Image (cartoon, rainbow, N blue to C red; front, side):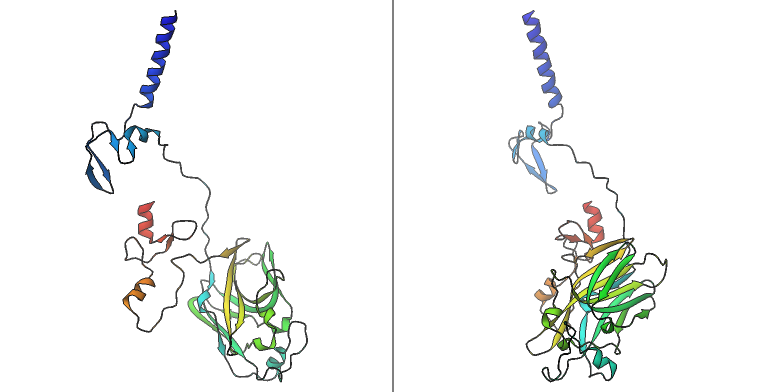
Length: 307
């Protein structure tokens, strides 16, 4: 009885061993291994580069891809972040000059304490696949509703009028009728403070056609900085896209962000560093994100091969 039981247990254990090692990779009879597409001979067929061949049998199976639903979002309007700038303009007359004299507390800032005003027009480049309407808000708060993004300015008289544009790419926003004088406002108002939730400059571009209830919009939030020489510059802080009832914060992707091309002749090394070619094929432009951290970008064909 005992002998029979022992033999049965031994048979079971032997069967388990055989089932666990039914497939060997690489084969025991092999005298080489392949790595990086090249063949390397090994004097010990049982020895792998990093250990025994039998250790490879403990590797898990290929993970199954996740089946999370995805949805492609199409942006109908886009403001080119790097194109936003101030353009110096002559001093306006009449109502335009009076409307720019208010500062944060609603009081008037004397022109004598500031010398001549610094008047600027706002310029930027944008693209739209449909008709759109653009409005510039100053010192406003933001509210995101199910139907769109709403901005409440502290002083509605400072807002620009709503400018309407037809669809087209590479359009230029340059309205000489709208003038802004940053020297009339306190520097803390021109900078963004998350605690105060006051947006210094909000450029709001909304789709001007389609359904009335929910319309797509694109907003560029900007701040104004003062240089030591007394001039002012406007800088885009972040961009938001409202589409299908949700608001998304747009992020620059490392490696394929827009770069201002310098027209001056540069060295070959500088040109190579500032290039946007795919790091794999070195010929096509990189346009596909590989890692969620946004630190690896390839071209479309190389990304398909990697997949």
